[in-house]
Length: 218
Image 1: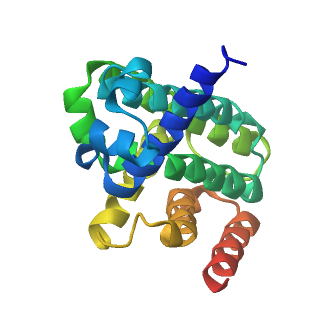
Image 2 (image 1 turned 180 degrees about the vertical axis):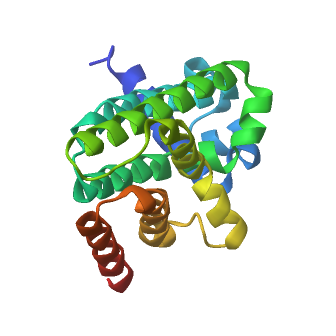
């Protein structure tokens, strides 16, 4: 039991840090605030995470692993219904780690490790979206010229990556609060998939409109 205690403390530190980062933004959260929120001494915090960057990197590592697991499922997407669920699940994961996207440029400018790893994140997102397009094409849900796949996938990744920044600029006081989550995720998923409208078969296009309408009405 004694050996497990440090791991429990380290995990609790990450949970509270993620909550504070998401609520206030990483630049506005100090290690002093984190230790005070946890009710532990700064020395105890430093024992587990000697620098703030180690907290950021640990949270990012957990996010990256979960993200890659999810992205690997993109080639199972066959139609608009699958794509809607996939994108919404992806946005939920992004929302759970929204501090990364809220303060992305600032984080990358200060953290070289994060900079290089986030480049891999973009590549993996693009690869995943291409796999999604290929799978939907083989299933007959979309018809897209191979010459348009790269630009379409890139546009979808741009919206995926910067949607929360857009939401934040629209409403800085409320956009990233928990009560705004469902509407923000729905809008994000809709706008990503809306980029496929020119390529969707008629029935699939109609179904996307129904899905978006149902979520808007709920």
